[in-house]
Image (cartoon, rainbow, N blue to C red; front, top):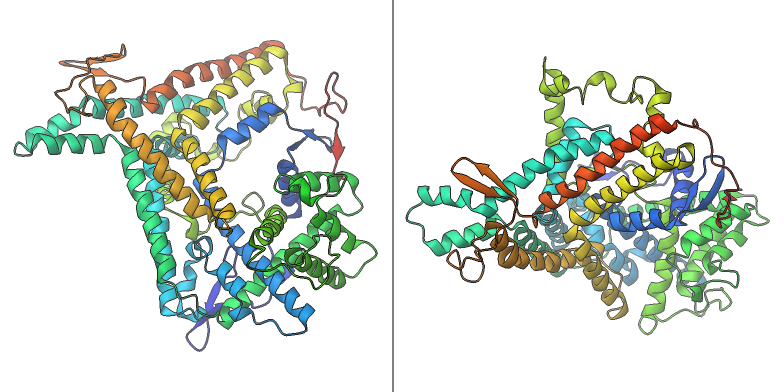
Length: 622
């Protein structure tokens, strides 16, 4: 399970967690990062002087457009699966305590249902080990789910090949530079023409023509099909998404959902104790701090509807939990009270706890039980999230991560050699990595930093601010829309799949499954567009409905002469589109630096508390 303790061999030859009981002293939890994550979730930002204000519409729009990358989605699926198992354990133990009987976690239908979800099995490959006591069928289910993860990696690779090439170029040439920086934008400008040229070669048919000379006996129809396939990464993405879904379904069918072993129940209890302690730390930090309580409340309201809030907008769950800390000094007593409150909220009829012992029915009240569980996840997501923990575990890696890792190793090997190209270019020298100096002096580096211009615009003149914001807007559009068209189409489909799962089937949404559904549908749409529109238009002698003979006669003005052939670069090409936008974005950022030189810099000063004309009131974490 996400963040589970590592395994060690025992004297019996089996494996077991290093520690069977949770120890707060060995937890990597950072309360400071948790605060920062809560502030972001509440849509607030720091002014640099202890004061916080709501983020503007531009920042919120940028965050929405950029969304989450695959690695963040993997982490979120793994974390939430662990949190759902903890919620089931809170519920089971509370109900059994109220009924005066011992909790039988190993055979609990709710705990087993949450444990055997795809989101949980997929990112816990260690469960295949016999030491965890899973049946042979359940071990096979874990293995099939891992295969589904590998297939999903091919899906992500096919959905954004241009993005992978840009990431590799970043690893090689500007590993320490932020994507907003002028240097990174120049790097993108250098890489995009190469990618656009490769795509144009495919679309023009140069590759297939060469293959035709080598394979004279291959039928024209087969060549046409191969040409369409070679130029359509979306088709590969769609097929691999379907394979991932099939393997996931096979994993569900293969599992026997047998009773949980003591090793698994110990692991579940370990994670539950960890969640409880982290929730305690956050609540203890927030109590008696009106500003902090307001921010936490607003962060939770992103996922908790008004129906489950008090008159002043505070979520009922938060209101009850904070009341557990009032008048209690002993940490053990507080944790017990928090545990009872969570169990009551997850199981009892009234979310206020006014109906003790009257439990929601697992069959007729599925929707209500799921809603309460999601509210618990809204809280635990603030204390266990990829923004709070650095968890680059191998279990999250797919084929793209392995390619990126290979690029990093190659770069290190080149840097170790004398007179390497990277060292000659001066963009990845060892002596400049992590120095924090962009122009030889920290103050000058901060002054001309694109990140600082965008984060602290009050330190700069109006022309510098305007040029930098315009450049950043173009960059976000370039990377968040043009580069991520498949992803932007996937998002609403995946959200709809999750909504149907929770409203119609009344069961928790599986993030890995819903996103695979979204990728399969979105990539199929783009594959059809590739085959029947983009290839036909880009090459000028389409391969769509009628094959090469059905010439569209559509020619684009961008023709690059190469001796006897003229290479037509289609404006529909993703790389060509990005190049058109990346050029003015880089020019504007360079102009912003020039404007900064002319207008000057006010220094690394904090923002004023009261901005003239601003309707945003500041708050503090106090």
